[in-house]
Image 1: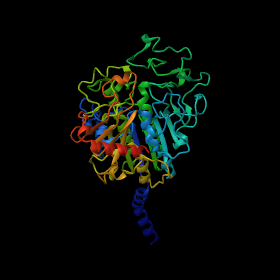
Image 2 (image 1 turned 45 degrees about the vertical axis):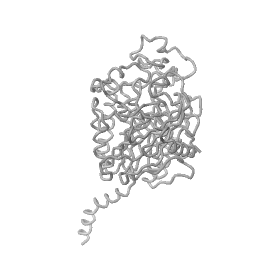
Image 3 (image 1 turned 30 degrees about the vertical axis):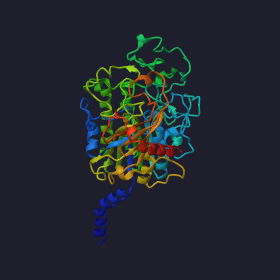
Image 4 (image 1 turned 90 degrees about the vertical axis):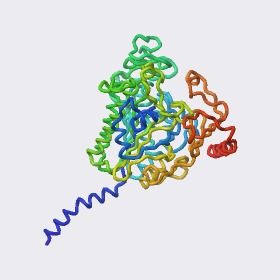
Length: 498
């Protein structure tokens, strides 16, 4: 009798284990690519570059057609993602130098800290670009505050961007591989040390310049800012994609027994574009597209790791980008000449640095096999909504007054609803308002400098109104025929601004 009872219990154990697993909060993996436009991947229309892994992710999940970052440049969009607050509400959230102080107040609730409060183990891997320390960072000691102080249990990051010094990785607050006998010094005001610069020695460069990026040369590529020391700690540009991918997948494997949140912010396809040799020449649209191929490999590695560890059916995996596309972003790498008909922003006007749709409308794919039914959604969603949406998914509480601009669009993300936000603010220097298929752009502050002279980066000097249902490319300003609508949207935008 006892033996039969034991055998019955043993037979029931797999079902009990599955039931327990189903009650466990789902893991969340958020892959944030860099400078990838709406038209840069196959499932959004690209033909000159193949992205089989991203396409497979879309085929098994939901592909959104009207999903947005909050801003058309990296630091402000990342700030909004992490805090649930529009970056234009806070001074000092523009594109940061590599030695900037942390711009997120450690005392405030963040996306990772909210999930951590619900029992998640959290990790940030890749591009940070939200500042570190409290000013005048000493790169030769433990660096804080940083990711750990805003909610991440583990971090392996680039302090800023690939084209800015310091060109080192920082793991849990310390520079990886630093030789204390060769201390790092960084300065964004004037040259330091004896390292050659791109301006002084262009003959040493393996990648020519088109604009800026003329300071300290690292690995044959000149960067923004000046750096001396830290030679043993310098990253290898051509293995960066593999390094960041391995750190993210390694974290997943190590923490597979508990709920986790992984924020994987890839360097691809930001400049300088130095994809690994196995991806060079694999596409029909040049070096920029070769970097897209490497990005697709990263997505595939994450998907394979989840499957190998039997986590696929309990993980929400999202792929998106921080802002719209740019082709020439300071290095003459042949990307413009070799586009070969590839359209990074698809049908949309503008791209990175632009107030038009191409600046913030991006690929956004949500996959959760067994929970999300495959499909396409035109729900209006924003990355600022991730804090409220993930909190809902994890049954976590957001402290009162935190994430003020974040809305719970989880039903749209999971495909349970076709409705997203009603209103969305887009940001690029100035701000614009989306309401349904209408877009209102007030007169914008007039930008200066070389980028301000480039097409679609020029901010409109007079108000504009577009009906995107008829004019997705934002070419016909219809404000004169729709003054009442423009006035109502202007009033709504002023109310949001507060």
